[in-house]
Length: 417
Image (cartoon, rainbow, N blue to C red; front, side, top):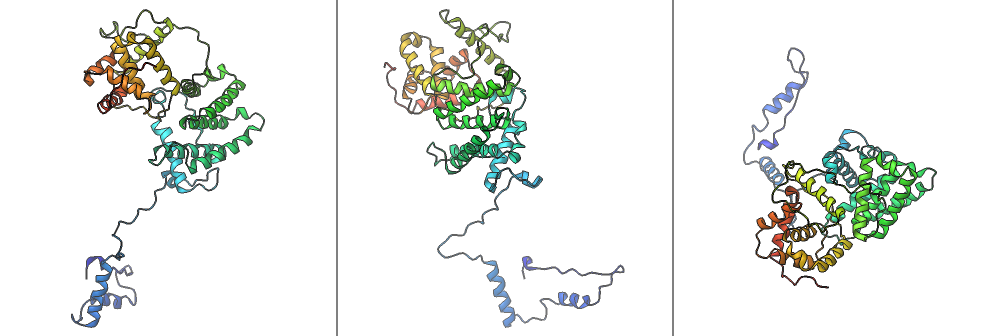
């Protein structure tokens, strides 16, 4: 008899270690188990066959054996406290997505580099309780979570999936009801839901819907004090500006939350007593506003590079900024030979565009960049772009990948029309 079939019996004894009445027979039976048996008897053979059958897994002849599927995981939060969400029918998959969404927001805090690197008042810290009290907000978070799952799916065709569409429709329906109430503009959850919907529209490239949501956000902000309200909410102000910038870059239209510029003077000083000798110096012909903004970003880059000592990857989904790409193409055609003579600036413009706003069918950027880097190794290209404005641990990896992809592409002439 193998060890895996050994069984144990437990008996109860009194304080002086005497077995309880009737247990002596049980002890003797256990001690004699397997003894006084004839090896060739029918009982012995039957027991051997039974043990052998139990040890062989039952597998259909037309199927290969496979490992049993592990039990479905459940979010850790379910082990900590019993939860009742604001909506009905929240299945285990939805619970996991919700747990991941808030673990990502509160623990990793990688939504944007600024939120990771600055200490702003956190808007999201109050959102967690809305999962249990606000059905509209719950559906908006589920919609965003399923949308992210759609983006990552290899089968995705660029549009929202079934679950994303379901929660989107539920969010919009519930939001319409909320907006009919008095003082709906003062409801923080309404503000957050509309921000979520705007980000979703931008993620799917639905700029008309994004514009509608931005108009709604602008109306809420105006009712709550406009610029004074945003000054008291720096994190919210940053989020709205980020969405507004994405909209403006994609459409070429005026931002919704643009504040009047009080001064175009430089705000960020160079962190070194004297600038690096190889630092790129813009032409004196530049407009002073562009020049000062460029210097501010350049000085900010000089401050950031020595501080980043670990791998830092920009999170988020790449958004197709069609208008920016077309404007860049027009400027390259207009500048012509002038920009081609400024090697460092040309490489920086094209390489930055290729890793941020360009799409696969924007072949003119690829072709122009391939022409610009002809005869240069990656180290040479890196030296050129580092003179202009370049954060090594952020841009080196995607920049090198873009450079390496050029070797697999055929070059075409510089864009002329």
